[in-house]
Length: 346
Image (cartoon, rainbow, N blue to C red; front, side, top):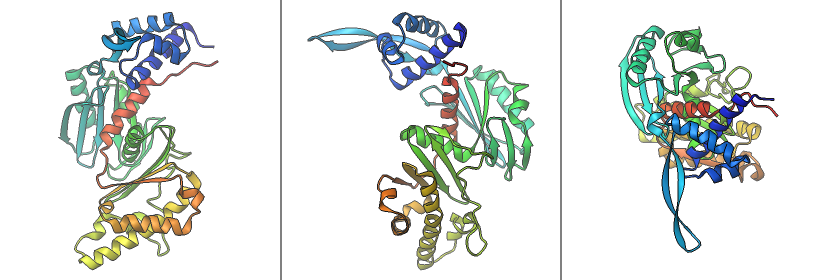
């Protein structure tokens, strides 16, 4: 059983989440959804008001033929700041968001790939903006988010680096770490429906993919669940080597057409196994290739030829021509972590 303090924190976290999802909700409505007394809700709300996390406002509603104001609750979004940090080979791209994911501040810093440089940047940002509700560090490569480690990043030349532990020595804000493509997928789950099973695939100069189940990353035993980029094709090439956008360079119109058709076919051949094994509600493909109707048609035709109608009839495929920024996904990850209820058992 959880103690009173843990339950109080759990109630506050649940209330914050509900207010974010339902702006202008009332105490009475919160109590009904949470199945707790109005007094329990009021005590938690009073603390949140004092902490300037939520605010009250009057909203006019029509009841029994006349307008009656109700006291509604909303998040004080600007008081809950989030820092997303996207690490690339030679630059650090940072964005600061409020709790409604509105962008407050953005800047790009050059660096030479050293964690110490990143640490100095974050220390200065925390000094300028105050403590964040969370800092999400976004990395290209294999990440163990539970242990806070970069297992391997070819682009950064990092291996087995305990990023979170090292940063915690200098920062007051909670710190999280996640792979860049997984952050893109988190945003897509947020934008669509976080109760869906979503398989996300990004194709540009490389291939990245991620699986989202009930709004959360499904990482697997070794943090590579759903990764298809290094699957070898019949000639020994990997999917990533054969199907990246660099292959379109310096091609004639006819060569480009045939190449796109082949790439789509290769992608679909791998996706058919993924679809059967994972059985997602939604498949999201983001790539320059999606601008071409031939690519989309070849994907669908191949899947229709090789999969049962029963498997495909409930599958939505989104073809997006623009690739999502991982920074917004990092902010959403922070929100999920902030709202997480832990330590409560029945």
